[in-house]
Image (cartoon, rainbow, N blue to C red; front, side, top):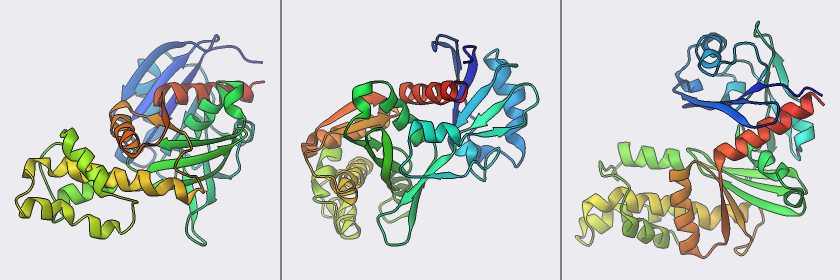
Length: 305
């Protein structure tokens, strides 16, 4: 078994988070880079990884493992999708090796499963590493059924059974918020920092149905003079997140009393935690970086077992 250092990276569409991991699985160095896949030119990933990422973490000659959109057709090398149900061991066996010159690099594949609509599949990249990493941190976590919410531009709701990712659904809540706030009749320059308006939006979302009709309330509440225009972004955020929270679990066959494992970036998790509390949904909150690191360590160690 290989016990040496390695470089672990969560390389998404907007940024890259990297950690140098020691032989004892402790983080020796960490760095964030504005090198999201969406900002790279074709063929740029390998060069910038070699010239910028590795030197910044003093990791020029250590092996590396990368998850996220870097394995998409927009990234370094297409890593494909592994069919669900998928375990840590199955993902480790499907890691894709790329020739990087100085030291080996592996890319984590995404996952593919049945979607909520007939004939349309679901896909994800990056979130699977966090979910499987969280499951693998404690033997008890790998037993029974677990429901995860991973907020983001495209939020993922993931159902796991006995340590394997069984199914998941994607909600384009973050992207809808940006589009509606910037380019629609509901546009607003105000920040989404009004907690009371956010809570009002969560309540207005109801059971999450007829969202297109409920969205008009964002404009109507201001036009009718019952709300401050500066509260618009917060209300819109609450309405969209509230609709997601109310409706997404049912797409996975999960009832309203099942505990949700909330994993992700702190400020986004703040919003979702507030919506869960308002809806009376039980949840536990966990750090996205910690889960990603755990997943990357587990995959790398399995690769070298």
